Image 1 (cartoon, rainbow, N blue to C red):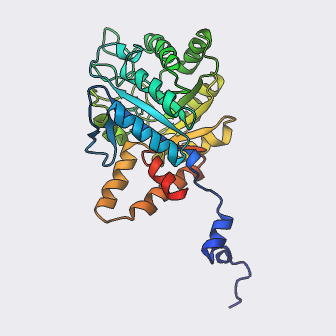
Image 2 (tube, helix red, strand yellow):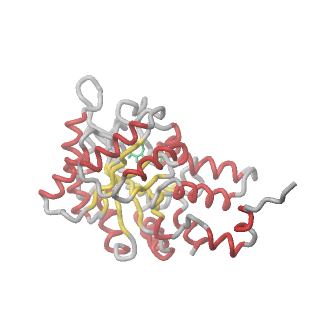
Image 3 (cartoon, rainbow, N blue to C red):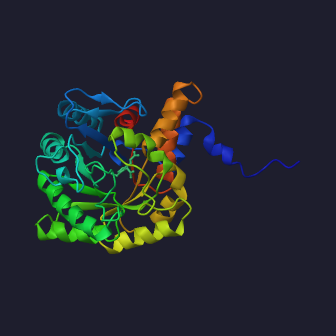
Amino acid sequence: MTPPRIRPRRLRTTPAMRRLVAETRLHPADLVLPMFVREDASEPVPIGSMPGVVQHSMESLARAADEAAHAGIGGVMLFGIPSVRDATGSQATDPDGILNRATERLQREVGDALVVQTDLCLDEFTDHGHCGVLDAAGHVDNDTTLERYADMAVAQANAGSSILGLSGMMDGQVAVVRDALDTAGHTDTAVLAYAAKYSSAFYGPFREAVDSQLQGDRRTYQQDPANRREGLREATLDLAEGADIVMVKPAMSYLDVLSDVAEISDVPVWAYQISGEYAMIEAAASQGWIDRRASILESVLGIRRAGADTVLTYWATEIAGWIK
Ligand code: PBG
């Protein structure tokens, strides 16, 4: 046999060589930490299906955000858990609502070190748990919901949020929010469009994280997992409506969509490694079935490799500590 002339293994011989030729790297600034803050909590409340993640009290939120800032991550994405919910999610637009208060505080305390961002959606604030307002027949009404999003955007920008994460999957939401922000003078507040967001079973633990009241599902507004081309269509629409950043969510089951979007986007492309993805790895690692740290790093690296510039992950602070 003639020995092979071409040997890809040459570039894998030593750790230094592998490091030199690595095509993708993880950097703390490319990570964003999603955080939950609960209005009636005086102590952090553990989330059973997300071991290591908590519903923060205002004080523990501030401490964790400070720790995240010191770890050098790029930003935090805030979710609020109000103690009172109603049909239209009034707490979302109240300047004294938990999410708006938390935003104000973090912007003041850590806003120079990292980018404070907010989830812009109604599901944490409505008593029915849907991402929008319901019509008489009980269906999520797209255009009435847009009016709520416009008000919510202005409230969040007033509170000091730098990037608004539009996760509701209503048609036209990017344009409506952009116009509302500009009219209110918030021309520098950026819009992160959850451009391709799929109706996923992997959101399961998040429902516990925000004490969701949802009965049923979100299939009339979130995308069908069967559709790849539609992900590109949603991203294209959001770009045309003026999105500053587009995101694909979930991440690991949608790497093809992520890669498609990265191919066409002229703005940053992000991906959200969601609650169920976190829970799966934690659960398997706690059984000793996979190496926890190696699996976490590989999962986030894979999401970056598929095309994400930045990854939202519940491990952001911990990963930053490892790779710093
Ligand atoms: C909507 C929103 C959800 C998540 C982020 N923003 C829930 C949903 O769409 O059902 C899920 C995040 C996760 O599962 O980690 N407010």
